[in-house]
Length: 459
Ligand code: UD1
Ligand code: CA
Image 1 (cartoon, helix red, strand yellow):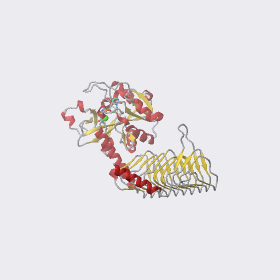
Image 2 (image 1 turned 90 degrees about the horizontal axis):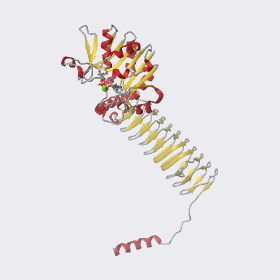
Image 3 (image 1 turned 90 degrees about the vertical axis):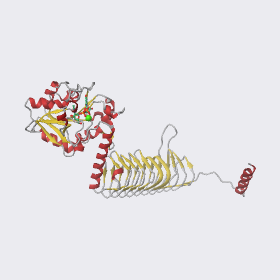
Image 4 (image 1 turned 30 degrees about the vertical axis):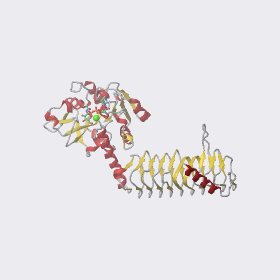
């Protein structure tokens, strides 16, 4: 059996924030989300998160995708583990991760389990030019790891050690819970250090091994906002490099923000300042121009999204959207469509080969094929209490500046003349005009202008 424990009960004081440290996002996802998502890929049998300080935020986010253990008082990483009751007495290997060290890649976690197969405890270490305040790996004359000394407790000589503890371990689960109660808090911080487990294991003849991580950035611990920004930049670069390797053109990778769970097709071009969030999928040969924001969007092939916002919605193939369109709440724009500037669709289905080129709001609406929506059309879908649906059937033509008061159905090939406000269904093939008769005053325009001029002269 394989288990995982993520420690996330600490206060994260150095963040100076009302948000839990592990809930701060990098690449669009909370730190703890990155770890849990990667652990899920590994198919571990149980993931346990130790929570304490501001635990509601973590529970609200992770919901029941993990088990929780509560540590009410934060007395150190060793003390935190003692609270994982659900894993006590269980046979197997456990990977331990710190919630504030979110960049560890799935392959590294996998490697830890692999190394754990023939050792009782594996510690992931790293060699740093500037080892800072990380815990130091202490070895004997044979080069074997004997213990970890925390920076605060280290003497001058130990502080010069450049090999550090990353805080990632793979350990025999039964031995872990056997030795945890023996950890004391006789140290500089008066905390129960999990790192003391190394010495307990070596002293009792258990096999301890350390493995070095290849890329030290993976084990970057995040304790303050500067480290948060550094981790974000690293992850962003990694994600962008991945998509460029897969054949996506990213014009300005420094200023392109793609979340880890997005998928982008070959020969798609992404212009500067684009944000692609959530679980967005973009097809092939599509162009996304500057300042577009796609969130949980599905975009097809050969489509052009110009400076637009698309949230929880779908745009299929060969479409042109924007500039400055806003599609949201389960909107679905099918193939061969064109939406122009200042068009907002909410919960709207737009079938193939239709047009909506300017200044329009369609809400709770279904539009058929080959429909033309003129400039400035508004579905009046809300009466202050309830929302109602509009249906516009195939081939209909809605003139400019019309209001369609829902619930309403516009028939096939029907025409709604420009400037109409209509509240009754229009049957197939009919035309409806709703306009007041206009009155013409002969030369009234000239008179009006002259009167205005006289008034101006008097002043
Ligand atoms: C820890 C390690 C250090 C290592 C470094 C790597 C210990 C004693 N030290 O130091 O050797 O180099 O990580 O980043 O383990 N936590 C709890 N309950 C507690 C205390 C902490 O859940 O009572 C959680 C925190 O929320 C955090 C993680 O454990 O996610 C690590 O705690 P932190 O205080 O940041 O440890 P470091 O001082 O960074
Ligand atoms: Ca830390």
